[in-house]
Length: 619
Image (cartoon, rainbow, N blue to C red; front, side, top):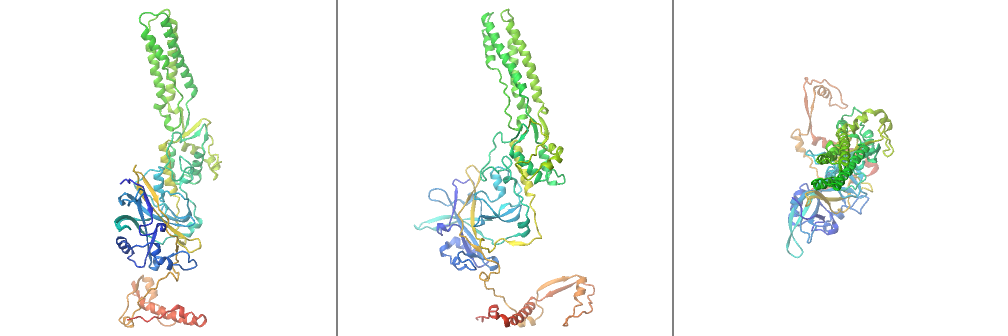
């Protein structure tokens, strides 16, 4: 549905407006149901009433609350409210929300980015309020077209928010509706160490190329509109900086000249349809235009001659000759700005119009009765008509043959100058002289459709550069250094009155830190039920079970139980064996060994009271 008002994200109605986005803590696994129930009952509270924000301040920074991890059996829900940006701030209709979510950012401005579904870690980000999803951002700016199959997630990692319309009693006693957004805050994630340390940065084309191929020289949130002439990128053999950067990137980053790179096939096919052009010879236009002007002048001369010596009823002919004199075609030299300007119909349109005008003049001249007074002027006109007709037909044949203007394709140029281009290509895109053996009158055009198609290909090609390291060390997403301070920022997507998707960002949450998995203050007590002695006497307790192949079972059967272990005959009968380990027995043995070690070390360090706490269990 199309929204009639713009949404505004703010703190929930039950909190102070300066609270911003709310974070609610739950200590049991049924936290989603509890949050929904509290939301319907109106029992959620603002920051001032949430005691955990002051209790969970530990470690070396007690100025901010610490959020525990799921391993601590602690879970958090995010909440905010969305209203209409109009008088009275009524609740925003949940049906008008196309999607909503939130991001987690660091206070130093870093954002958790991913590329083609692979985490890239914390990276610096600007202050723009555009869509965090890179694909939707490019679609919104009309740099690429919508596609049916969803691309792997790229951009800033987001988490969903769900809309719920609830009713609550206002301060004046009447009941009022509110549209709340809620979602789960997952405090998890990691990135490969090698990906952070040795990643070959694979930026999207859009931020490394200027318009019309990217947005490097444009506002990051601006919807880019094609203007006539944007694709005219080589004038008389001199390339525009945008074209130089494009070719340099194709050669250096995407290895366009390496035939072994199969991912470049689509680029090869596309560049085979982009041509160098030579502009039509302007002197041909000038010559034909002068001849048409001469014919028009002679039309006036004949009209004057007939007016001086009128023979019969010639007034209508004189008026027609004067009209032809004033309506002579200008045959202006075309303003070439796009590749489509070289279509035969466009090039020959003015010439065809001039030929029609000339045919009208010829028919009019032949209708004039020969008289001694007009004979000289009529002969001069007929001579001019013949010269102009020959010149126009020659110009028409010249213009209709596109081979006179279309030169080699861009891909043919690359293939013909491969060795020299490889030597010329450099990382310095501003000074790399990449156009060699190009004639001085060469022009290069990209139409709007061609520019869009190339952006699509560059989008696909740049995402293919993502590297996935699977054998490297994983670094946790949330760490506990002094600069590791985080906050939550929500957003809502909706359709405006023109049916275009827009995005609105909300206020930040309270800054917080994230506890380490083994933080002693963040850990919650865990009760483990130990087995009774009678349980062990009843038989084998089921535990971890392994299937040993024949060769491994033969070796395991040779291990004796004596101390020290001795080897005995296997007698495995050539069978696979199922081996079960009793976890309770192993747990008790581990406890006994632990007691021995602790008591030995307790003689020197006296730490036994800190290791084990004995509390009688109440009946």
